[in-house]
Amino acid sequence: MISIREYELAESLEQAHEMLLKNRFNTIIGGGAFLRLGSKRINKAIDLSKLGLDYIEEDEHEIRIGAMATLRQLEMSSALLENFSGTVAESVKHIVGVQLRNIVTVGGTVYSRYGFSDPITALLALETYVDLYKGGRMSLDEFLEKGSPRDILTQVVIKKSMEKASFKMLRNSSGDYAIINACVAVKNGSIRIAAGARPARAKLAAAASEFISGRELSEENIEKAAQMAAEELDFGSNMRASADYRRQMCRVLVKRALMEV
Image (cartoon, rainbow, N blue to C red):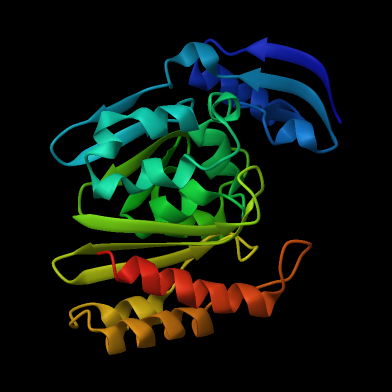
């Protein structure tokens, strides 16, 4: 259960950031879908709903997704359906139901760096950046590693550098978190392999990506790359699956994704 002492609708990003820094228990609430499942005491909940951050924009070079855009918007966006083989939309459509996907925001999901997140894995396989109000732009890979405490994520930017992609996940039921997920993206033979829900946050399989990039996607090479990805990433155990099961299933999902790109 969460308790909120005060609530404020921010009039600007500067005001929201100032309020965030005033008290370490002040929090940007986004959609608040996951926050309400936990136990947290919030001094002031800062709402960004009035700041016009619920957009998905596209130009020749990139797709920009505002922090307050919802997972449902990702799922229905023509820009995301028509690019990257529809992988970003595919990564969110199995998450619980439309009602929840209408609540969960991109900013809340990405900034929190949730390990169970499906869309983070898809975004990581693509060339994705995050724009932070004070921290500026950094790659999603770097942000997932380092984070940026007490800042505000304003938008996610996906470069149109990848031609094809494939997202795969395994879950016990449609309403549950993924046991393991994986995404592969490719352009001109350069391939990026990412896996998440390990259950730690998503990570690139750098050695496997380097091995398979530029090589023929033969059955033998795909099998070796999938095995390398499973061996180089760390996996953990929780109530949904053991580390060894996740490792085995990661190999399977990466192999299936590679066969589709």
